[in-house]
Image (cartoon, rainbow, N blue to C red):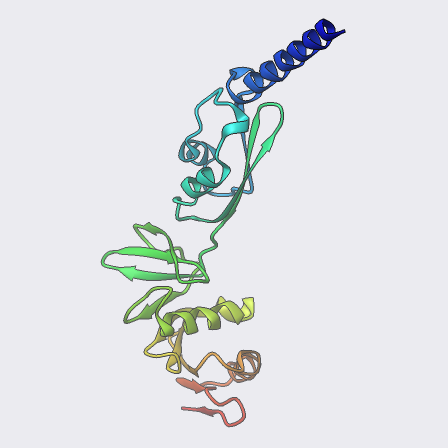
Length: 220
C-alpha cells in the first residue's frame, strides 16, 4: 500500500512538474501571434514591435503591465490593454488619440488631442483641423485646456467655419473664421448658448461678433 502511495505521489509530482515546465518554460505554449485591435492609423507592425515580446516566449510569463507601458510609449495611443488568449496569442487592444487642433511649431504643425497632448508632428497642418494659438501650449496650460474644451463642444457645422482659435487666457478665447471675420468667445462657459447665438448672427454682415456674454451680444 505504501509503495503504491509513493508511486502515485511520484507520478503526481511528475505530472505537476511537467505541466509547470510546459506552461512557464516551454515554447509549446509560447507566443506565436500578436493580435492588434483598435488601431486605425498606427500600423499594427509598429505596435507589435513596440510591445517587444519575443516569438515563442512563454505566454504565461509575459508581463502584461510592462507590455502596456512599452506600447503606450507610442504617443498617438491614448490607452492600451494587453491580454492572454490561450493557447498562444497575445492580444493588444488600443485606443488612438484623436487630434482636435493644430499648434504651429516653427515651420511644422503639432497635432494635439482633447487633453492637449501632442499626438504627432507633421510638415503641414491638416485642413480639417483648426489652428490653435496659445502662448504656452500643453496639457498643463489653462488657456490651452479652455480652448480645447471650447473646440470640443462646438457643433460640427460651426467648427468647419473656424480657421483659427486664439486663447490669450482661459477667458480670452476668440475665433477667426474662414471668411476672415472674428468671433469674441470669452471663456469656456455656456458653450451651447454661445454657439446657438453665433449661428443665428452669422448670416448678418459684420466684421466682429461678440458672444462672450450670450445674453448681451454685439456686432461691429
